[in-house]
Length: 128
Image (cartoon, rainbow, N blue to C red; front, side, top):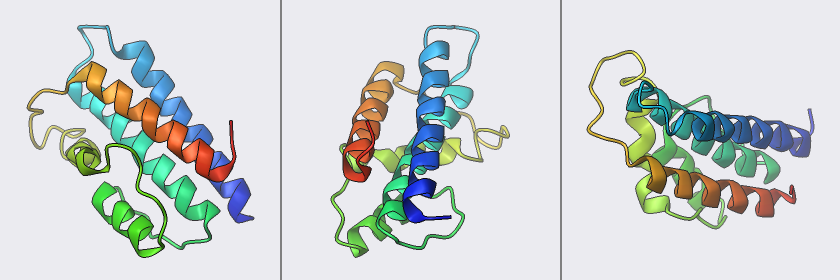
């Protein structure tokens, strides 16, 4: 599959995770672990979309810090809030399976970051 097709698919999936996040954000019965999972997944997929578009090979990983390093190694611009994004890493696995308890997700600030990262990725891969 061509890099642009993979990038478009990944960005579409990232947008679906943000959509789920938006729909669940105000529900007090939804815990931070589930919201954080969708946030982490959205960022992970957006980063992978940009890497794919640039033709950069990446392994299957949930590690946002590793993906940010790959972006830097490729000379690609960092996404907005890059210094905060890896705080979502524990939501990928550990919190999802109850291995650690979330310390408290700032739901609105996270949504702002997600929107900024998706806009950044869409701009870089030429998707609206």
